[in-house]
Length: 407
Ligand code: AMP
Image 1 (cartoon, helix red, strand yellow):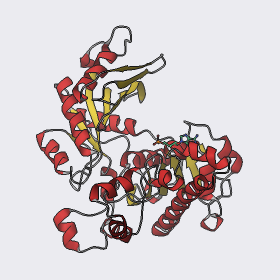
Image 2 (spheres, rainbow, N blue to C red):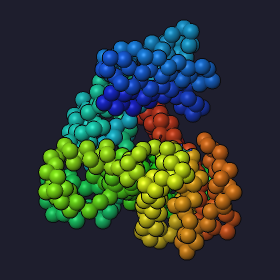
Image 3 (spheres, helix red, strand yellow):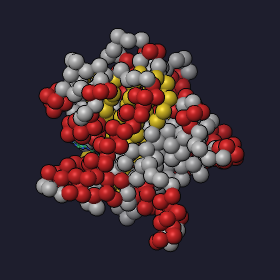
């Protein structure tokens, strides 16, 4: 079945056209700067030359129209009719407490996504905009919402409750939700194919290290702890997000710098993390290059990042009483031997021993085992594929064909 997967930001639409039986990408693309004078349009058909262009695209409806025009154009021959697309899968960041699985989108589901606007003000409004735009362009086929939070629905109360008055949870649903669910789900399932151990008895720590970053403890197929929380701001140090900090720092800053709420929000979400620590860049490649040139603050930013990941791996090993495998994924996790090595150094007491050569030689885009044969805990690099999870779940729900092949 051909499924169009859509991931909408406030001024961007990312898409993948996927053939789900063969798990094959037919085309992917990104439209950025929607609403600006010129938008940047990128289409990358599989196995053919793509295009990168600029033109005016006023809104998300026009962006979806642009995508359909490209897929249908006779020169590109990606699909011959809109009817070739059987369903649309939408990445929706926040499903609140309501959704533990992907769902067919109807008016009630759209209302529920709207109700979670307060919980994810940066993500859910554009996600809903994308759904509305896609429904306008493709009104006659099923649209499915796949939530970033759904995989973490299994968190036990001892993990998702914060140490604040319980009435705040009851009244406002202030609790840990967790994010990057499709990625943690996908790489843990990929690992199950590599081990003889029954999945119900397998304990895995999945490290999604990209511009956004999170760690999850997956015990017997379920997420039991995860580093992101009420919002994607908590946990690891990220590209521009602070991750965990003592909440008193906020009171202190309000007093010292007379910051307003929106400035605090920007400070922690956009000016902190690797960017804030280094004062130079949020991109790990840039930091590694500058640290090699002797920049102390770039080196410190890398050190803080790695220290934090190590801290979570240790904590999650304790929570699960051990760990069969640590998995690295996403931009940094898949591509940086240096960062993987820094995170895992001096962890022999935890039964983790990296094979330096395998770590260095790991090829981008491939599943690679990088632990030594003596290591009690296996270490793998497993490329993530969130779009494929969305496409397969969408196909399953669109055809109501029963259980997801990923479960
Ligand atoms: P993502 O959000 O998954 O696309 O990941 C983006 C992050 O991955 C950025 O910080 C990139 O610098 C980082 N990244 C990509 N390739 C490499 C690499 N070869 N070495 C280090 N970091 C990388």
